[in-house]
Image (tube, rainbow, N blue to C red; front, side):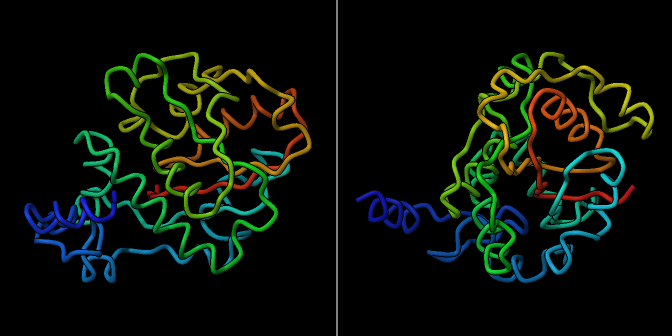
Length: 232
């Protein structure tokens, strides 16, 4: 019934593509076929062990396995509207849609093989309250729906409402994230292979801080997945 009513609503008030703004044909979702075809995909999935994002974490995280981002996040590009509207436009459904799309493409390459659970990078309570949702959790929700992997968003929490990372240098980003996370359920990830999901990775400082806190008291392996990757 939900599918029937959604199709009916699409016919009455069709969706606009989040990238180009044109009407999206029924069944295409939130990104039209043409924009989907031209998204700046990273090709990280071709080598999830030694791509440019994976190298950010070499020597900074223990027991890291596969790493990949779906698209390059280029602030002035049309495709950046996906990230911008997801984070600042009160459009959490974009995260779910993109997470599902990413998982469907990466799943065919066995990226999720051996992974036990998904943990999204948490927001502070203050920031999530202001925004109304955690965009990384929405992306993770889409990945969970597509893969069947359990989403575990209560294992680690953000205890510091950090300043925006956007205008900070690599060193400043690392300092800004120090002590920002707290592991609250070590037993849930002990001995497991955990997939960490973030919306956008630039220097990797946020993920390094989160994973370091997790591995301080829990013996776990991690893989890393992001919707967007910004070349620094």
